[in-house]
Image 1 (cartoon, rainbow, N blue to C red):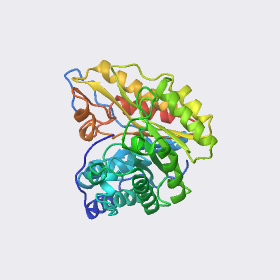
Image 2: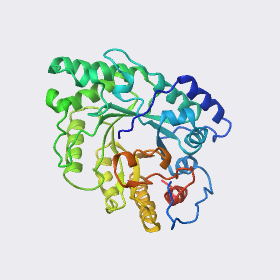
Image 3: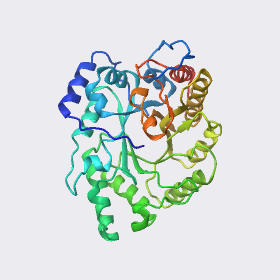
Image 4: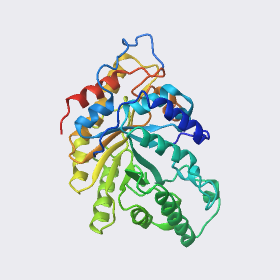
Length: 366
């Protein structure tokens, strides 16, 4: 999802990381604010951090990371390190950030995040190699021919994946390739290269780092329907051809105005049967403002539905929230009149959604 970020100095991130080391939990073994007048009493974060309970449940619990906040806000950095066992760069591995001009790569911010994760015993989900948004102007403003554009795509994927070889757990290789009706999204990649760009992207990424787990990632696929079916058919077809599609990400951007996807476990189970890993990759649950206690309860239940879908799917490896605090949520800028979508409020206090996830993780055994 789109959220712009300011430039971050590597030294600032390193300084924050060093200062937080003393307060984070020990290294985990690798395995797989607003408040209205009717706000409920504050939820206390009793019990172990989410990452400890998630380890016991057999999954990684992660968050998207705003690198600017990580560098400049100690409370934010402390929560990233203490609560989560995986991290996803919100913006700093996207094309416009790492290749601002053709052939000139800048991994400063992304390197800082990877170093922070390694210092805190966290795995990294790379996000995202091929997307139709957040592309640099040099790429979108010029009308490249198909052969040249294909070479540009090859070079970008190969360069970025090679740079991080051995340090990325999972890559979102192709992000949001489908429209809501199940057709391929009509973007630059499809128009110039045809649907074969998806197969190429996975092939090139695997060649650059054979050990990284390669995901296709999308939203609106949590329930049965044309988009979920189209994604399933594509993954089944590519795997039959031997294309290294190894994971399917279900973003999980929900809204309390609509029913939570109660059939998520069944939907994920279909993909599980194809032999791929699955994950909830971008969970948040937005609320129409001002929020009331009923909306907050619905939010907690929706988060539980997403986590339950993962826990009930044998090869679901992770549950990632798309930002953990309302202070740095992308939702208010993208959905007018909605917000409070995260599991912590603007003051980093746990909400009912946090408590619900913590309880379910503590009770889970797989």
